[in-house]
Image 1 (cartoon, rainbow, N blue to C red):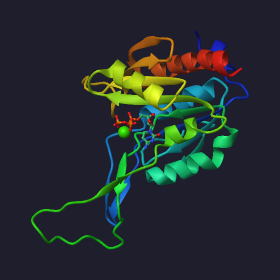
Image 2 (tube, rainbow, N blue to C red; image 1 turned 135 degrees about the horizontal axis):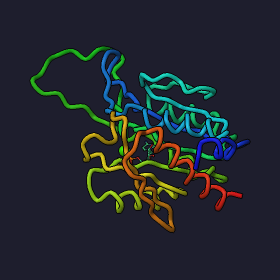
Image 3 (tube, rainbow, N blue to C red; image 1 turned 30 degrees about the vertical axis):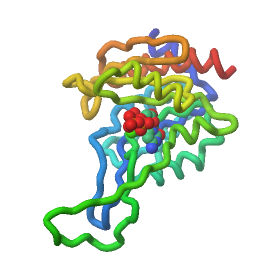
Image 4 (tube, protein in one colour; image 1 turned 90 degrees about the horizontal axis):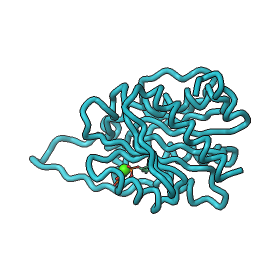
Length: 225
Ligand code: CTP
Ligand code: CA
């Protein structure tokens, strides 16, 4: 399908996208995070906007410029990201969780810098809220698309997440393939719904984002209208 013919597919539809990593403070000068670049989420935001959607992008710490006509809110931690999502979730028709949210944060945040003392250091972590699951469990949830980055048994793990989080769709990528996924400009996806699995072949993240949003559109129309 050409970009021209898809230009108004999402006219009047509000889409929220989370992107990038989150950053969890250890103390005032240190944090833990992950290697997510945010590129896939930003590419999806751009594709959705080009297809006529009103797009809200909730971004963790990334070095990317905001796609044209996309409303962006920057956040740092998983808890910040959940707060930003909940502030505007009521108006959303579609929620796309592309962020690599840190699963854990420091149990008791240190308000002062940790000093170097013993030879070994242990930190205790506690689980962060699951943003996607929280959205999917709402009374009237928007259409939900999750992502799953896996290193093995990709389709099975992704399908398990689709069911456990009660999502409409999940896009899985195999992060063990060199040159694809995390930090790369290219990616490949396995797009899974209750009924079927579709393969999107390796391509630029912008081309892939367009293909993915076409699948989201047909599944959204089928299930939510
Ligand atoms: N996700 C989220 N909030 C979290 C963790 C994950 O919104 N605290 C979302 C991600 O944005 C992604 C999906 O849930 O869309 C799956 O994330 P993933 O890390 O693959 O799954 P987890 O459920 O965290 O399981 P695990 O990391 O153990 O594989
Ligand atoms: Ca995780």
